[in-house]
Length: 268
Image 1 (cartoon, rainbow, N blue to C red):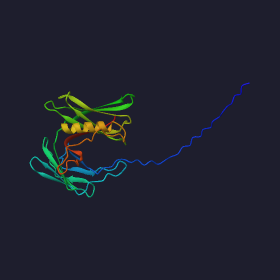
Image 2: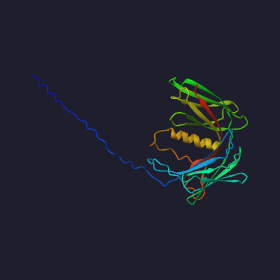
Image 3: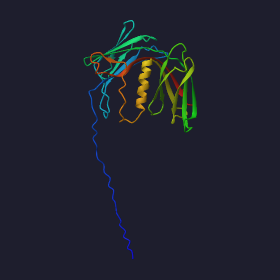
Image 4: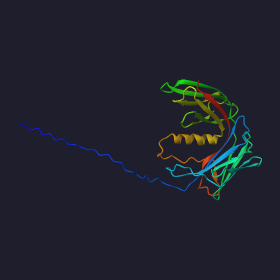
């Protein structure tokens, strides 16, 4: 007679939580130059600001401002516009700026004993002529699609930077566009949002930008969309600001000048 022996193994699984300290690489803080001179259509463009900050460790909540810098912008006529810091915010203000389409401007920042220089041209932009919506867009057929149309000039190369800012607690969408294959045609900026509904709005801002800024933002947006927060960037994306005192200590950010057209559209 065969005996059947049943062996019952009771496996108890215990869960526990351990605090793990991540040792992330650190480096000396770098200067971050957020110098976007924007001339909104229909305004004088005289009030402008430039933000200076410093890089910080990944888990730091606060972004440290770069205080006590000397900031100025010089146009092609050698007119100097001084930007004065607003308190200790790292935001430097000027209310006498004179924008000029195709005018060349030079930014100079003196900070911590070093001199940073950048030169850029103020680019024009066409007016947004109309906006179309589709409430049954996307793969699900339930997303809201927005198209903002404008006429591209046919006698020049143009580059565009779009901002779509919805009246929702979500991150604005940024996009770039060039007219290489649609030069001189009516073209549009495209935006899609699942939660955008009747009565809500989208602020659409189209910036005329230089080819170099277009390339800078195109690469930057590709990198930010490539993976999670711990993914290593393929390369540091450098802007047009140069440290003339110590080139190895290069800053982050960009100095650009744009004419901007704004259209606030309400979903119908």
